[in-house]
Length: 280
Image 1 (spheres, rainbow, N blue to C red):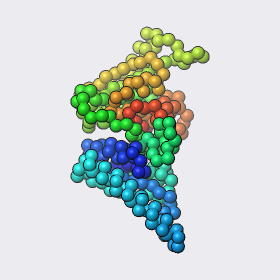
Image 2 (image 1 turned 120 degrees about the horizontal axis):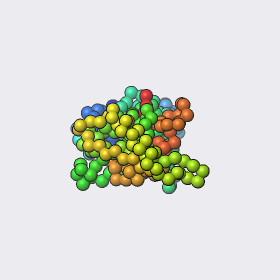
Image 3 (image 1 turned 30 degrees about the vertical axis):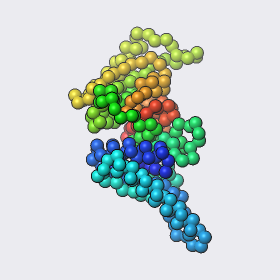
Image 4 (image 1 turned 90 degrees about the vertical axis):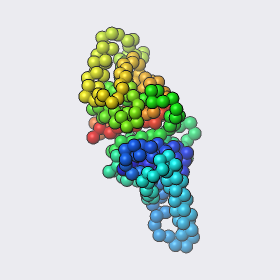
């Protein structure tokens, strides 16, 4: 099952379209979920009854519009709708406990102008225990499969292995190539140390070792080692990509944190849909 969270925003509908395509390819049912304050789902009397009715009707309209969008993308897809009581972050995370994937738009209604990711999307990406996809801008159709690719950030950590699992699975299903990108740069007081052959070779060896356990004859792979800050390297590599995949935690992260600093940054800087693959 794939769950997509909607709130009536354009970003939510884009996320629904993306989720419908993915559900059809996975042959999985799609659940469209919308969260409302808990009191909306509780019995009310007097003047509050009318408010409850109005809120529930609005919520059902949001769900119906999203369901229609999913079926326009993939007619015949099994789509269910569900109204969730409570905070959208905790409600969606709980609803996705047994889901393959949780999909949300990067910014919903009420998002602060100029921010690339809203508080709900950020909270879900940071705390969900299942794989999460944030949909900002879907790639434009056309150009053929030869120009399509999924980009995976690699750093040799367990999270990178999980990201590669997700990336190869996506590439096989969508018929795209996979670009594995290893960024390397040694920090120093005034920035980063200049590139040197020894460090670059170490990075190449790390990338090849990580890739070795994931290669698939059905997927064309491009392996890249780039000197630079991982955030800038991944943002540039993912420009025009179908999807960018990062692990939930990389090297050097604190135990108990579900997202590393690079993954956190890519929530704001990814130029395409972003998948955060959980290392379970």
